[in-house]
Amino acid sequence: MALAAAALPAAAAEQAPEFFRVYRPYSDVVFYDGYNDNIFDKDLDDGILRHRNSLYAKRLTDKALDWFGLETRLDVNIRALCDNYDRIGNVSVALVPKGAETYDHEQVTRIELARFITPFMNKNTLPDVVPYTYDASLMSMIFHDMDLREKYDLWLEFELFGIPYAANKQVKGCADRNDVFAGTLTFTCTDDPAPASRDHILVPIVMKKPEYKGNNFNNYSEQGTDTIGTATKTYKFTLPERVTDGRITLIMSNHGANAGGEEYVPRLHLLYFDKELAMTWKNGKDCEPYRVYNTQPNGIYGTYIRPELSWINQSNWCPGDAIPIRYIDLGELEAGEHEIMIRVPEAVFADKQGDFPVSMYFQGLRAGKLPVGIEEVSASPEAPRVVRNGNVLRLENGEVREVSIYSYDGRFLYGRHTESPEVSIVGFEPGVYLVNFTIADGSIVSYKAIKN
Image (tube, rainbow, N blue to C red; front, top):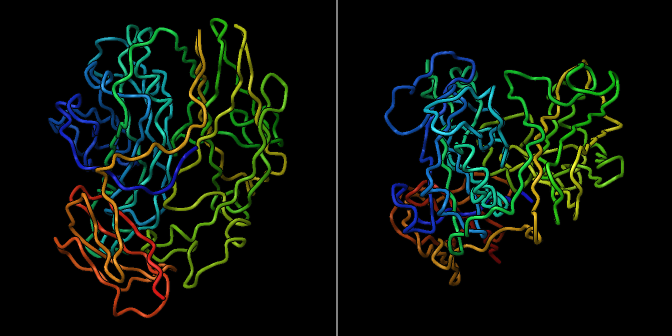
């Protein structure tokens, strides 16, 4: 499952990842206007292939791939620049012919690993960085698949589509600018590197289309549905051989910001595998915990705190949150063609707007069992953490850059740039506060402080 905000561990040098249990393939990389065909940083000599201003890729060397363990988490940090709206971002892997120096991202097979939504952020207001955390244990199995690695180079993609046009007018310092966000990816392992494997089978099923392409799953286009007028979509894949244990990973989010749009109405979802019902779910999320990151006034967060039930009834996802990753466990499975059908019976798609970007892939083992209970991987004991002594809060194992305090409904109360690891709430009224320590790598360690 996808998990919410977590602190990043201490930084580590990419050039020698085997000596660290932290690996950072992207560090504060800048994204630009997704609609602009001029690729602004295309000539930077930083090892990053820039397909578009919104899609970057880096080839994972054998040394980097060998580094991963089977207890791995992925942290994504997004820093506000000149896009103050909620946008979709994701991390994916491209399977590229061996030895290629570049590739066409629309022609190669790609697998989405994680998806997130940015908050409405004003770059001049703290916090200006939002974190997302994911369990990456199943990703590590892909990286250690030697059959896959002998056939392909694996390129790690970082995608974030943004546009600066509103911020050019609304955000101080953004006039005439094209940079929209900056992003950092960090992998953290809590175990030793995993062994190479030839028991793993990977079958890509579908990869979402980006915003500028559109027409994912909907009920109004031939590409988006099995039957016009019905939100039903079938995806087929062929399993090359029998597996002792199989699992489908699904990432799906509901979009449509128009009046009555699908972003705002949680719907029942039904998933069938080989015509048998395998999973049901209904979205609905309490968005109050993400208010603190939504520093730009917007139509989602009003002035006052909203009750949980109000959010759950009107929110399929939250600006500033990770999109859930769902797993469909299949057990033993025979070779041959299989199908997944997803139905959202009550979906309306008012005015034929919006869609549901869907990504899926299959993983199986020729022998043995896949990891069970995919959850957040425990952080290293050396990871930054906040300890409290009375009214004094202290950050341990982290180099402090800024500290800020908010009311729990998201009102900014106090902030300063400092190297001191301590802050006091002695002068604050009784209540609940969110204390944020920004550390040297730009990540934020948060603490919920109750003052009686």
